[in-house]
Length: 367
Image (cartoon, rainbow, N blue to C red):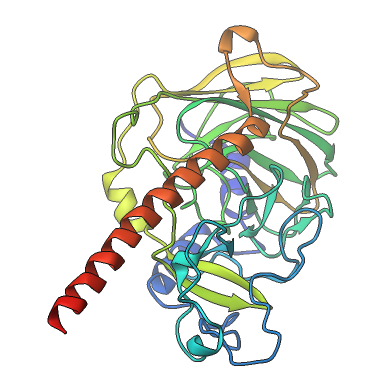
């Protein structure tokens, strides 16, 4: 669909102060694969031999995430870690690991107590409220994702436009972890968005008419349906990350994971019978997208200038979704993820202990 003059201005000049998307994309590509050192060069991925070292055990704020943390960028992502109570720590003595890599297997992904906006998986210039449910934009379009994601089933969340001064705009919807945080949602293959201005829907930078726009005071609903195609597959459970590197940042440990954007992009395929719908003040605007790319999606928003929005991940909604959609609130993902992550961790630990036992037996035979 051909975009009018305003659409083109929104796609280019509103992306940042005077920066088009092309330089953004090139910058990301040039940085990908280079280990990020700016934020973590003074916080090495080893145990320091110090008295009362409390790495990973410092008390967290009520929302469960440290206020000082590394950001996901430069080709690397960071996931908060915590001690795993099920792991065998008998061989782990702090002094004996001074100057050595911290064993990832005795920690686990720290599960958040609620569905919030992510503090680290966002553009740093965005302002996140203390309760981690509201966000305010800055200058150019920049994105924030939630801390919980979904890869199968029917899910729903709401956003209320609490403040939208003249000249501001939003793109709201669903994003995979690989979307560029410094670009509008729907700029690449990893995101599907609904824009406030004219109600245009965006994917891969293609804007198409979808519905009327939305404005300050409107409450919007976001529905995604992802058929369960992995029921009997090896990757049904999430990654444990126990085999990843751990870095220490401001007394907290984080798993470090390399960005696999280019590899994933080459293998992406449409998922049959999947769909995305948007709702405005309880009214279904119709199917926005069908047969979307398979993957894991987060609620997401990209904001232009000082617009302010508030998320509602459930379980109660201002405008509940139609019962025939048979969907869950994002809030219900908390319990599901706890079970899935625990099963994945225990599976890893079982295999790890078996290998360690076999290695010890082999060493004993040689003696």
